[in-house]
Image (cartoon, chains in turn green, brown, cyan):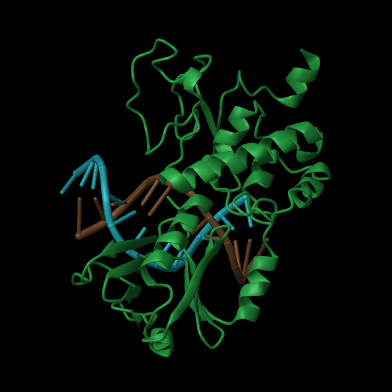
Length: 276
DNA sequence: AGCTCATGGCGAG
DNA sequence: TCGCCCTGAGCTG
């Protein structure tokens, strides 16, 4: 779940439910209890996401910094709170709604200065209208690292996760192991613009759909798929299954501890393209 | 009951 | 590059 679009939706939902009024802040599980007490009952000023980070602002230069990591969840629900289920590290509640945080990598009370420090390490976020993609290009054009590693690097693109990485490289027919410096600027621009569009759609729909209408199983005259993980995707977690475009088996490889997925035919290597 | 895996990131070596 | 942290779901026995 948690790539940049998820955090942006969360910021919107939390803001709609709680911002502008006093909020009860607690830690049923206990780990955040001491910090929760410091903002409990205070007015929430706003909620902002940047990349995969979420900041809930209270008066007095206090921010709750949340990072969901791989497995974190933050559920926002209407109505009176139910008894906490499982390890609820943070609960927000007012008279209309409540929100439970579980499994997050980070849940901490920080100052605006600490927040600025974290945000300063992030690359441009495709969901940020003010973002400057040239910063990402400067990194990519001079790097020998695989483009697959660069796209996932939060200092290059903030908010892109493993699903968007696999899918955007497929959509632009770029092999994930190609060195960043072998990309042309036109390819980079196309990737950036595509991420902007895909991630905004993710914010609207709450899922990651990347398959173009002409490539849906129906349009291609194939049987409907049953191997989905929430959204319609080309290669993410489709190892060994036929590519939606050419039918070649999707490949996978672990790179820096994360699974890469690509179609060897639609995404030829730089070398084979240069030779062939 | 115990294992494995997951859309992430950190620090040690 | 590895191991570890966070939690829960979906297996296997």
